[in-house]
Structure formats: C-alpha cells, structure tokens
Image (cartoon, helix red, strand yellow):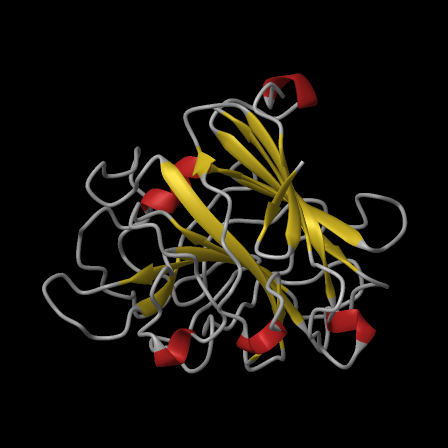
Length: 269
C-alpha cells in the first residue's frame, strides 16, 4: 500500500487483466461514489493524459489550457437511471498552436466500449471497459466534423471547451454503447495509435460535474479546485490493477450523489 498525496493507491503489478476476463488491449475502469449516482443532474468523468509528459489532468482545465487532457470517457445525461449517455472524447490540439483543444467525439463500436451499470450491486459503482487503441483518436490528422450523420445511439461534443472537460454527451447505451456520434468528425479512430501522440505511460483523474461540465469533485484533496492529486503512472504495456480512494477530510461536492469515493483501473496488455 502506498500513499499518494493524501490518498491510498494500491498497485498490483502481478494481476492479470486477462485473468479477470478483460480482453487483451483493453483497460477496465471502475468509478465509485459515496452513496449513489444521479445521471440526470451530474456527469461522471474519467480523464486521461496519454502524452507521456507527466502532467496529471486537473479539474481547472480552463485556467491551464487543458494541460494533461488527452481523452475522457463521460457518463451521464439522457434519460438517466441505469441507461445514461456515454461518450468517448479526444481533446484534439491543432499542431503548432497554443489554442485550447477541441473536444471531439471518437467513433466506437459496442465491442470497443462497454458500460456496465451498478457493477457492485450497491449502486455506488459503474464499470467502463474500452479498447486502448481508441486513445489514438485522429492520429495527427486534422479532423473535419461531418455535416450530418445518422447514428442510432450517438454521442456528440461541442466544438470548443467551456469548462472542464467540456463536451456534451448524447449517447444512450443499455448494456453496451452503440457506435457513432451525431456530429461526428470525418476521421474515425485509426487502426492503431500514433506512436508520436500516444505514450505507453498514462496518467488519469476522475471528476464529477454539473450538466454544463463545470467540475464539482475530483480524486484530489481539494475537490473541484484540486491541484494536489498525483496520478499513479499506468504502464499500458503491463498487466496492472490500481485502486485509488479519496482521502479523509477532502473537500467534496455538497450533494453526496456527486461525491467521488474512488475507483479501480485494471489493464490487459
């Protein structure tokens, strides 16, 4: 057991993702809250940094030009209940500029991104399992949003960030999400991530937000304003099982349904 900036972090490098039923090339994320979920009024966000620059993503993205933001899985919205909307969003940065990144939806299939509601039977945990190659996103190509598409159950994202993490989901999966976004970019995820854009060492954070994606809580001691959380390094070339929990005494959202308890990340290389 190791302590990381006031929180308990339990890495288990000997754990085999495949032994847990996770397909090779996939990452499984369990998101845990204190009392239950409200998918109608809140969004539950898993944010990752795949740039290999050592920067933990923090909820104050609008004041840092979204440093450490590579992609996010956003859960919430829609009809609420156990069938919230699900979105996989890349924070795409125009090469050679310092402009804020554009949150753009990544097209996925039901096999590439799986959502399991109430995965602990207590309504305090959901599980997302996704193929890591989705993190490759547009692989350096300049994405041009298509004028229209005809998806069945689809996520969408606004073209410019407002708060953190700044994208509006609109996909409604049941046991597993369906594929394409309603305002989808013309470029779909590449067959494999671009080595120049996606590192094999990832950092992460969890947020809860309001429907406008203004942060309300995070894994850090300072909650919505935290800049203290130091993400464990996730080496995606190895099998690992990493558990994190919010430390006692942390500043948290006023509504218990928006309070993060912690989570668990399990990788199958």
